[in-house]
Amino acid sequence: MKRISMAVVTAVALSLGLAACGGSQYILSTKEGRMLVSDGKPQLDEKTGMYKLKDADGKATMVPKADIVQIMER
Image (cartoon, rainbow, N blue to C red; front, side, top):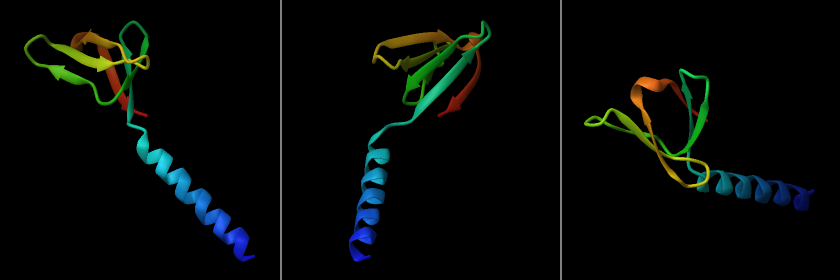
């Protein structure tokens, strides 16, 4: 019984540790119906009116603020 409890505690601790390592992802939906996934919170550049984000492949992308309908944290 003690071995099972220790295994459960270890599994939970490992799961929480791995979940903490991953950063937040955000989903941006556009007026055209596209869904963009951003690693980390998209940053709005007030001067240009564009959101800067890194997509799932790590590529930097910019999207006009006027094209974004909704931003949700995943």
